[in-house]
Amino acid sequence: MTSHDCNKVVLKMYLALDGELSTDEMREFLFELDRCSCCFRSFEQEKSFRAYLVSKIERRCMPESALEQLRKTLGMPNLMRIS
Amino acid sequence: MFQREFVPQMDTLYNFGFHLTYNEVDAQDLVQETLLKAYRFINSYQEGTNAKAWLFRILKNAFINEYRKRARQPDPIDYEEVVHYQDREDASYSGYVDLRQEIFQGLMGDEVTIALNNLPVDFRTVVLLCDIEGFTYEEIASIMDIPIGTVRSRLHRARNMLKEELKTYAANQGFKENR
Image 1 (cartoon, rainbow over the protein chains, first blue to last red):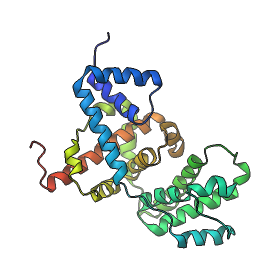
Image 2: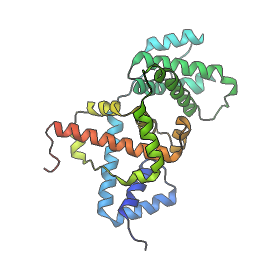
Image 3: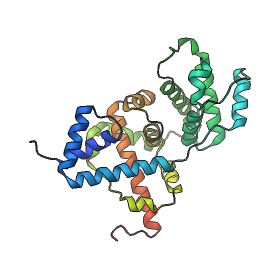
Image 4: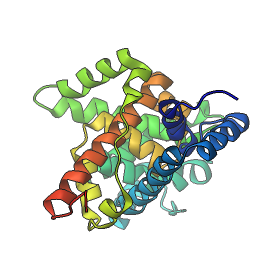
């Protein structure tokens, strides 16, 4: 069994949460979390922080007046908002 | 095709433009310029390719061209930071800013928008593209014209900056970390 290195696990943690690990890398990462409660705690904290961030960042939709302007500029009177 | 492939991205483009400029009119202008450009080049667009990443790239370039030109001088802090972190690549990962859930849960929420707004625009952009729009590192690298290693280090740095700022807000509101 390889030795556990918290710094390396933290590096992988960001990649894991950003969906940038392959299936094998993810499996390895989860195994390391099982080996160390500190890493597991950091992972849970980071996960909560991300969720909090996403829930609090303001999202804005294009105002109807701007859409009307766009219809005129593009010469597309039937342009519809699709979301 | 324009209506099917590009128009569904209009609101996310507007939101991205708004967070880059923090100005509704400028955001509208950016979306308009982006969609006009996409319309003009529609014949070179291959249906089914990554329309969203392409449109975001156009908008980001429009932002750089139009809005940085307006500044009295380029923002030297952004570029210095970027060069610094590019050089260090993964070395910049060494710091992990610990932010306990009870600290940020005690905040009102507006602080996140303010903290994000306070980030240098290159750092704000990677957070928006990754956390809000869900782009992959590869897509972000292509939208921003930077290496993937820089996307990684810039995201890491940006999130740490956000955490530090939120910690400061929490401390100002009387939250004691050691309680």
